[in-house]
Image 1 (spheres, helix red, strand yellow):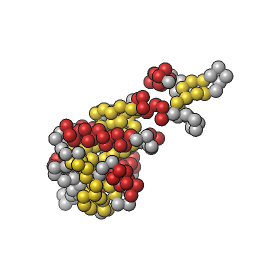
Image 2 (spheres, helix red, strand yellow):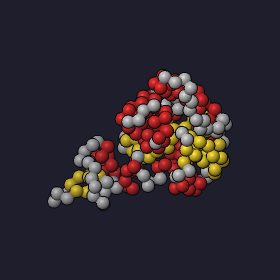
Image 3 (cartoon, helix red, strand yellow):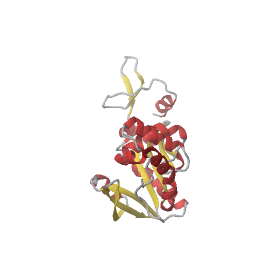
Image 4 (cartoon, helix red, strand yellow):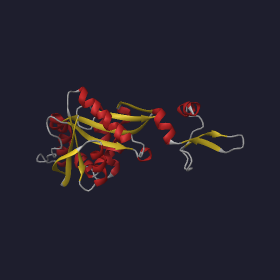
Amino acid sequence: MKKQTKRYKQNIYFEEDSNDNFSFIAGYTDGGAPYGMTWEEIIPQDLRFRAALKKDAEKAAELIHIAIADIAEKLTGQTKNENIRETLAHFFREENNRLSYKNTIVADILGEAAGIVITYPGEAASRLDEPILKRLRKKRQNEEIFLDKEADEGDFYVDTLCVADRFRGNGIGSKLLKEAEKTALQKGYSRLSLNVAQDNPHAKKVYERIGYRKDKVIEINEHPYDYMVKIL
C-alpha cells in the first residue's frame, strides 16, 4: 500500500477511474487488469492540514463559491460563475480581507486542496470587509452599499467551510473544524461561532453533533441563518 501511494505522488501510472472498487489506477497486472486504491485507503495516510498559499486561489475560489452560494454574488458584485470565482480568487490572493489565504487552512491530500476552512476574530470582521466593500461600491457606483454583520466580537468566527465533492464522506469537514478550534485556542478565544442557513437542517445537525448550539437568528443577504456557538 505504501509503495502504491509513493508511486501516486510521483504521478506514475495513476489516473482517475470510475470503477466502483477503487478511485485511482495504481498500475496494471501482467494480464492487463487495473488495480488501485480507494479514498478510504488514501486519506488516512496522506491527509494533512497546512496554511493556505496564494497558489491555492483557483481551487479555494471554487470551494468558497460552493459554500456561500448567493452571498458570493453579493460580495463580488458579479452574477456569472466565471466572474464570481475570478473575483473570489483575487480576494483570496490578497492579505487583508475576510477571504484571504492568510485566514485559510487547507486540507491537503497528495498535493490537492480537498477542503478549506476560513476563520478570523469576530471583532476583525468590519476591518476585513473594508477592501471587499470598497471594490463593491466602486463597481456598483453606490456608496450606500453595506455588508451584513456575520460575527460577534469576542468570537472566533468560521466564515467558510467546504470540502470538495469527491472527498466528502470521509470526515474531512469535522477535522477542518478541529483545526479551527486549535487556532482559536492558540489565539486566546474560548468561543467558536458559525452561521448555518435555516434551510440546511442536515448541516445544522452535524454542527450540533460536534458541540455547536444555536445562539440566535441573524439575516445574511436577506436569508435567515442560525448563529451557532461552541464553547471550547
